[in-house]
Every structure is written in structure tokens, then in C-alpha cells.
Length: 286
Ligand code: PDD
Image 1: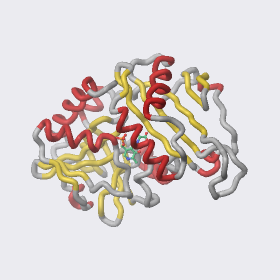
Image 2: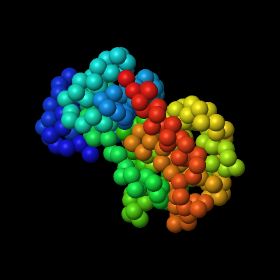
Image 3: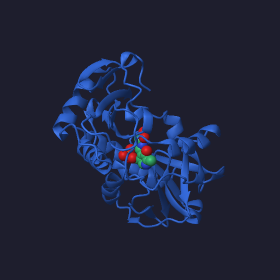
């Protein structure tokens, strides 16, 4: 997590995170009216920058906020922030809200978006934890139907994640009407009969940047991949379950709702994809 003395960026100025303040009338605070990105940085280089910035642009467009920066502009801000912070491996958090205005649900006219960026050290998982895989639980997906927008309105995700935090599990995997959607802050994949399967890309879930990346990596390592609806029962009898996100990378789930997945060890597909991911980090960071 960011230390209080890390350097952040707010509306054109770099400053200490502990000193950084926004108005209580900011619509991000009042309504959760904003969007965000979390971008991994390895060895001070930004991983899959273009894809993250393209998704930021799509999220802004989806909620009617004008993108305050060009792709190159965002990258320049990110690079400056990386340089001003201590760690080589970081995560850059970008948040853009609609801005500060008198409270009224409808979009106010003529205000500037609030642009906030911070850096936190990349939360590398301890080697032993990764080697054993993680535990997850399931819960009904009670979130809104615009999960494809990376919105800061995350109460549904927060409540879902809390359920797993309370039982010391790594994630809450979400089920909507009998079908797998995603997890509170990750995408979910299963392996059945040697095939990697992911739920369809649609409005109910966020298309993680690692979704298209795993599409590439699965080809590279020769694992067939299909995007299709995944029923809850298939999740429960999967040979392997994987999580992906900017911070988890590729992470094997070895326990689901207190029952072991296969033999309770990370499977061959997740291991192969994790190894390919590590290689891609070196090749695709700019
Ligand atoms: N979360 N689905 C949800 C709901 C997410 O919040 C995330 C990422 C993902 C995976 O997306 P990506 O591969 O682009 O990280 C899927 C970030 C890391 C977060 O909120 O901290």
C-alpha cells in the first residue's frame, strides 16, 4: 500500500500523498462518479501501457467524462510518478472523477474532471503462498449490470471481497444466476479436460487487461482456450481454477469453498501460464 510519504499527482501537481486533498464536494466522494485504472510497473517500466490507457479511455467514454489526457500524456505523467517514487516494481493508480460541483445527480456543466494518480509498491505475493495456491469462496454476484466499466463505484465489489477477507481467503468468486462472472477484483478462468475456459466478455464483467494477454500466452504455450458461459457446477468440478489481475498476475486457486481443487496443488496450466507471464513482463514493459 502507498506509504504516507509517497509522491502522488493531483490536478497538475506532484505532492506528498499525506498532504494531498480533494474537496468533499468532489463527485467521486459524493457519488462514486469516476473511473480508475491500476497499471503494473516492473523495473520502472509500464506493463501493457497501451491496453490499460485504452481501457481508461473506454471507461471515461462510457460515463461521459472527457478524457483529460492523450495516451502519451498519461504515459508521461505515469513515468514522472514512477521516477518520483522509490520502488522499482510499482502499481500506478489513476482515478478520474467528474469533478467538484454542488450536489445534484445530473451531470453538472462546465466543470473540470479531478485527475488523481498515486503509486504503491507492487504487492508481490510471498513465494510460498504462490507455490501453494490460494483459497477462494463463492458468493452471489449482486453488483450492477455495468461491470465492464472500471468505475470507482465499487461498493458491490467491496462487500463481496469482505466475505472472503473474513475467512482469510484470497478472493470471492461471483456467481450470477448459476453462471460464473468474475471475482471481486480479478478475472476467473477454469481448466477442464486440458482446455482453458473463460466466461464470455460482456457488460457484466470487467475485461481485464490480462484477458487478451492470456489469449496470447495460451497460444504461446499451446493450451486451447475457449470463451463461453461457465456454469457454477463446472467451476466446482474444474481441474484448475485461476485468477488474473494486475496485482495477482496469474494465481492458482487450490481451495474453493473449503474443498480442494483437484489435488490441492497449482496445476500444469496455471504454472505454464504463470511462467509465460513472467517472460512477457520483461518483453512488454515500456
Ligand atoms: N482490479 N475484474 C475486476 C472486478 C477487477 O477489479 C479487476 C482488477 C479485474 C482484472 O483486471 P486487470 O487484469 O486489468 O487487472 C477483473 C484491480 C487490480 C483493482 O481494482 O485493484
